Length: 347
Ligand code: 6MZ
Image (cartoon, rainbow, N blue to C red; front, top):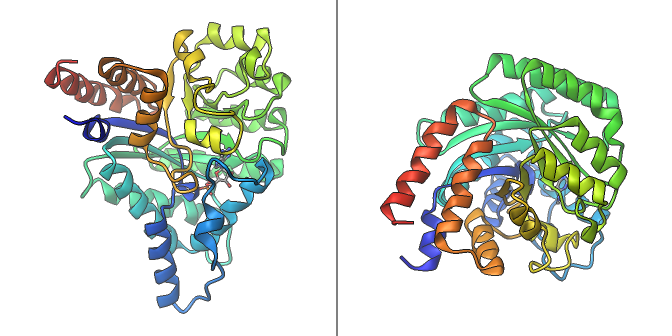
C-alpha cells in the first residue's frame, strides 16, 4: 500500500471539526449556486482567497476569526445549512473517516431560530445513516464572545435536543476567539450541561493564558481542544503542564490550524510530541478543514512525517482515539474496526 492510500484507508475518527470552518471550496461553490438559484444576492465575491488561511498568512488571530463570517453568510437559512452539512459529512467519509463529531454554533438569522439551526443539522445527521457508513454526532458550540445570557440559552437548547435526540447530540463545547470572554463566566452554564449528561470539551490554551488554562483543567472537561500553550516551553507553567499530565485529559490536536494561525511556529515544534511522549492522550483532528485547506488523512500524514512515527504507531494513534469518542455505544465497534485494520495489515 503506498503512503497516501494508507492514510486514506486508515479508519479515522474526527473529534474536532467546526462545521462552518470545514466548508471546502467545492461545497462553497455549491452553496453559491444554491443561493443564486434561490434568487439570493451573493455577497461573498472574493471568498476563496479571503476564506483560506495558509502558513504565510499575514492576518493576526483576531482577523482570522473574521473569515467565519464568509461561511456564515452561506449557511444562513435551513436549506443552505442542510446542504452544507450534508456535503461536509460526505467529504469526511470520502476521506476515510468512520466516526465524526461535528460541532457548530447555533445562530438566530432572519430565516431561522437557534433551535431550527440545531434541528436542521440533526435532521441531516439522522438521514446520513441511510446512505453513509460513517457514524456522525453533533456537539453544540458556545462562542466565548457571546453574552452569558446567550450561552445559557444555547445550553438549554442543547439539553432539550439531547433529551429528544440522544443518538445524535453528544456534547457541548466552548470555542471562539480566545482573546474574547472569560472561561469562568461560562462555568455555571457548562455545569448545567454536564449535569444533564452532555459531555464537555473546551478550547484550551490556544493563546498563552496560564491562569485560564488552570481553571479549565480543574474543571475536568472530558476533552480539550488544541492545548497549545500548556507546556512551559510554549507559554504554560510547570503547574499547567503537570496538572494536564496528572489528569491525562485527552487533547484534540490540530497541527495545520495551529501552524497557520501562528499559535505554533512550525510543525516540528508542535506540542503533539510533548503530549505523545508524556502519554497524554492525543487525537489528531482538522479543526477547520476548509479554512486551512486540509483533511484528516493529511493531518495524520503531516504528523507521522514530522515526528517519524511507524505505521504501527500511526494505527495505534487512530485506535487510541476511539476511546475518547463521546458516544459510549460507538466505542466498541470503532475499536473492532481499527483492530481489524491492524490485523489485516499486520501492524
Ligand atoms: C476557536 C474556533 C476555531 O460553529 O459556525 N472556531 N474557535 N479556535 C479556532 N481555531 C482556529 N475555529 C473555529 O464554525 C465556526 C466557528 O467555530 C469556532 C468559531 O467560533 C467560529 O466562528 P460554526 O459551525
